[in-house]
Image (cartoon, rainbow, N blue to C red; front, side, top):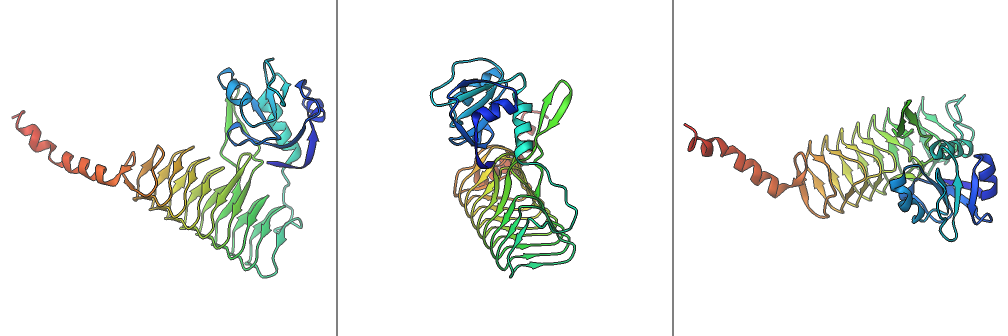
Length: 310
């Protein structure tokens, strides 16, 4: 998530009542989770085992709950509860805007776009040339839909990320400060759901086609010219390469990398990274040739065992 304009770190420290350690002349340009940060970003850490990762990240400003040595050209903002401080900043600079009309006056829609009845379009949405949004679609805040995109009836784009922090009181929801970006010539089938990023972008690449009832989690990045069949589910922060094919009911776990031109057969469950250019099958998914050999061997297991147990 990027701020509309840079924010002085002194202002941020005052806003969250933090002690400032380090370069007090820095300006914050955005706020992000640690695995997505860039120079100028704010991040937070509240667990000691992740201190080093956060301090060595590209983040310029780290909200932290323990006084430690500040790396050069960075700032530490010392607070008791870094998560709440971080979340409060996201809420302040990306406040939720409830709709009072079907199409927000803050949306930008190309004159050549087709918007059918009962479509709901939130604030800061952009819809490009010759895109077609069918009836009963919801497009939530901060979604960018580029040119020649088709979104079929009943889909919901830009839903809040399914992302919670647990403490002794239960689960606390993160405010989703990210966006959804749908690139040119993407087709999205009926009743699909696509979560916005927690702090970054969920991206559907140019020319990719989604069948009905596909779910795409937060911060997922899908490459160009992919085919994703019905009821596939892609968990948060997974990156999928170009020209990937996922057949029906494939499930992919979070934080994975799926290489270019991978094919995953129907009903497979993917729990680890997949190497480019191969066909995978099964649960857990493995290279198809290997998996089929294993299944063939299992069919002969009763015969083999009967030789020893009669």
